[in-house]
Amino acid sequence: RIMGDFRKAARSSSSSSATTPIRSILEKPHCLMTPHGFDVKNLTGGDGEIPTLEKLMDFFLSTGTSILGLEKETIEFVVNSALERRDFRNQNNNLIHGEMQALDRLDSFLADGCSTADRSLADVSDNNSSRLSVHLALGTLSPRTIYWKTHGAMVFHDSDGDGREDNRKWLQSHLEMRDFFLYTAFASGDKLYQQEGLPVSKKQIGVEWNNPQDDIHTNTWKRWANGSTQLPMVDAAMRELMSTGYCSNRVRQNVASVLTKDLKLDWRVGAEWFQFLLEDHCVGANYGNWLYFSGVGPDPKNRHFRTISQLKRYDGEGEYVKKWIPALANVEDIEAILRPWDFDITGFESSLVDPSSQLTWQDLQFLKENRQLMVNPTIDNSYKE
Image (tube, rainbow, N blue to C red; front, side, top):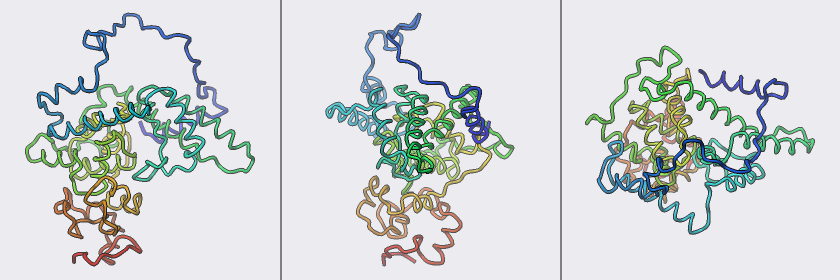
């Protein structure tokens, strides 16, 4: 029930001395056979053709049917962004969602990037993430393949005899976390989707959630979902996610924290919106992580992320938020990027939550005493008292 306990057990069972070590990679099949009783027409609407993205979304876009109570313009933006990504890849022969592409990505990342990747950053676009989650979600790459190829890369590294610990092992440990959420999903069944979650401690029982459909909370929900909270890290994350179908684990945790810990909106609506947006969506991983960071899942700790302090720590020069928030794109002062409401930057007049709640106690005290968050920032004289 607890991730830490599961990971200890997994590592014990996969050690070289274990009686049931990690199984080897299966041989490629000589041919593929249609499962008995399978009829492709049952999945394609009867015409035998796999529906296009346009066809799948036509009902919502043509009728104006709302998805999760969000505006039609928001849904159109998400769909058009997905279509543009697909067309760009097709035009540039830049296909990424196949087995060959998955294996190429895994091999290249193990050779260059895996051992030096800084996975904690807000922006992991510079080869700081394996980006293998989409292949795992689609089944174009198996977790066993990742495990054993990573093992092989570490053995090769160890043959150098320099005694250094191989930094690639984190990739195997992330498979443990993925397995934990998958097993949690299998074990819980439809309880995975219940509002009360899967509590593992008494303090997690009886959490009261706001309903995003209630008039008093509808606008709050929409602002969070479309990246208009006026909290820089949160808005950058949601805009990246809507535009690309991806954002780093670091910022996913932060946006989940704001929705559930600060706004106290039903965690399931956040999980459903992520399900609609994520290219790498996996039911177990997505809903498991939302349970985990909402405080009603398999984690006894109460994790409340302070997004401004997180931005300071994991995007110290503001490059990530500048990439996704046009109003901050040309701002040079890091203090103004961290606290745009204190510098009269247009579009940050009314943040969805009190900015002081998004600072750790230490950072809040430092700000009060020094009128700045960074130790040696470029001070802008436009700071308001």
